[in-house]
Image 1 (cartoon, rainbow, N blue to C red):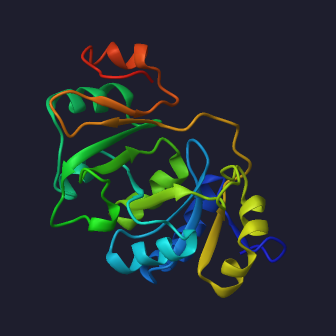
Image 2 (cartoon, rainbow, N blue to C red; image 1 turned 180 degrees about the vertical axis):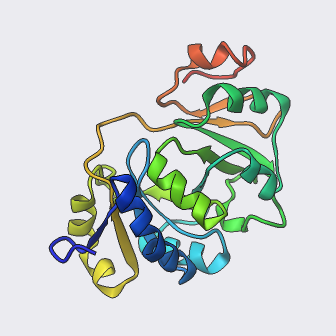
Length: 223
């Protein structure tokens, strides 16, 4: 860990490999990691109840507002016991990995209730950030993800912003920061509800509705 920033370098392939051990130790301790994604920096950790509770405590997340899950490959959807409709499988084939989040049904025996939305779905994205994808694969399971920011403050695009806003949590070891450099400004992921017969836009984002309709013509809503 760099003494001047209290963060772990997470940029080059060599740095990523060196960071795996302390990062996995943080996850196994059921504490929170800050890490780069393909959009902004995120907070997350394991998907067990204690890890989710730690994330809720750090973010002061209100009830009914779930976290999404980051995965590294469609095989993790099967491992989570989530249901992937045929149209969602087409979306996966054309737009994953990348900034598209799918809300799926299922996973009752694998995914804690706190990670479910109001209708019971679970939000999942196959990240295209190679560094965090490597960490997820080393962990062997999905990790939670939510934007790394205080309420009312834009999501962090650098490790330095997180260290400034969350210095107390870092000092306590409640939060550990993986420094993947400054991220370029980008739109958030597009979020689609895939729990029904047709996909529906929940949140517009990086992938437009017109592009998505090339794969799923019956898409409801605009993105």
